[in-house]
Length: 388
Image (cartoon, rainbow, N blue to C red; front, top):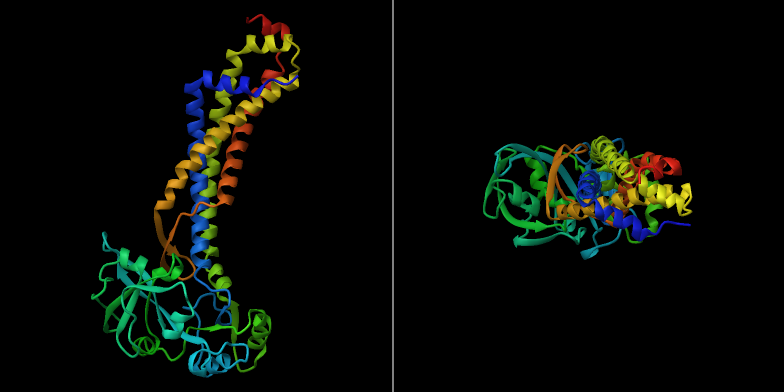
């Protein structure tokens, strides 16, 4: 015979205070665990959505970021003339030659300097990123000392509003617009005219070349041609893959730190669940003896107490996930370990995060309740009935 689930749930309700305290401890750990997963999911989504699938980023071989890369003008001309590159307006290759450097801006509120990516591009660069749109002001004019800033930059840094002037590279640059990149990494960048920025920073080579393929399936051929051309020292990646790789170092750090904290906290939560279940067994010795006398086997008692611990884990998991879901309304900024630039992203709650958090909660409940359940199942009927 099996002990009804309603009986198990009623026992938890009878001990509401201890149930609430134990579930609260489990919920706290689940909150930390889920928040870490949400942070990692937000980071990956921010960087992956930065790229377009049919766009290809070309950088110098051995470079991990655009900042470390260099592409000469002759190399850029060879690459953009490849037959796999789409043809844009006026019969010109659909390609953008870009330069990427770091500048320092003062953050609003604490006036602390932070590295910010400034990208030199042109109208084609904007056309290659359809998720980018001007939401305030206008696009910078080619050949001018005008810049536009991402929405995250405008929200977090001084002198990054329309009409403001920012001094860097020994020049004053006027902010003429704010753009929204749909929550991608571009929101944490400043854009200006590529030729003006190269001149101001005394660069004679581009950092990267972005091209749109005429046919998506032509990527493998295009990448092989770039890799084997003796005139080139470059490599190519799909833009989404390229920006996804930029998240690896920071993602690893977030996961290691977050999971370490979760494991430490979970030990305390499991001990709390174990104490609660041991107390439950001690207070219900007579009840356990009665169940055994009525014909319920040791296995049924073991299962009942494990189910009780599992329900504790489920309750704690649901509470923890619900509280963690509120973090979606907050944004987070930190240093990207790949580019050493400030990067802003949001907490993202996905179905995968919910499943992992609930599984973690259930495991904590079962581990914490296993030994007390074994203790209850091993009670002798005669000894248990003496407590009645």
